[in-house]
Length: 235
Image (cartoon, rainbow, N blue to C red; front, side, top):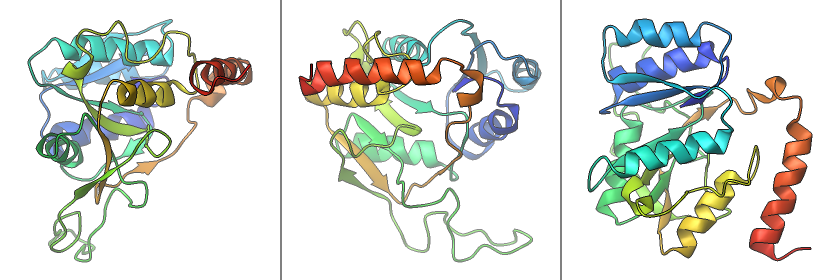
C-alpha cells in the first residue's frame, strides 16, 4: 500500500487485511507522510508482526510498485502480491479470493470487479447478527479475461514470480499516470493472462493524493507522451 497522508483510509484498510483476510504480510510504503500514518503503523505493528512500514520518502508512485514487485518476486516460487491504493475498501477475504481464482485458472494478474461494491449481501442485518457470504447467496466469483485497457488498477493481485528476472514491472519513465497501463501491457506482451474476478468488488475514493502534488498536470502530460510513443507509436 503506497500512501501519502491518508490515515483515514490506510488504518481501516490495514485492519481489514489483518483481521478479515488471509495475508502473510502487509507492506505500507510511507511516501513522506506528515500526518499520523507512520506512527499508527508502528504502533499497530506492536500487536501484529505481519505489518511492515517501508520508508519510501522521495520515491515515485511506480518506483514503489517496482520495489514491491522486486522484493516479492524472490520470496518464494509462488507469491501473490496485492498492489493496493490507499483509498479503497475491500470485501471480506477479497485478496485471498482474487489470489485463489488467479492461481486456479492460470492467470498472472487478477483485478477486482468494478461493477460491485466492497460489501454485498442480501442478508446484512443492522446489528450484524447474520452476515452471509459477501459475494451474495450461492454466488461463486469467477474470472473474465481482461486485456490491457479493461483492467482495474486500484486493487489487483499479481503472480510476483512472473517478474523475477525482469528489471522492472513498470517502465521507470512513468511518474504519475499510465504506469498501470504500462504494467498490464508489458505483462500481456510477455504472455501473461489477465482477468477481472467477477464478484469481488471494492470501493474506491480516487485521486486522494492529487492535492499533494503541485506537478500533477505536468507529470500527466509527460507520461501521456511517453505512453503514446512507447505503446501506440505516436510521434
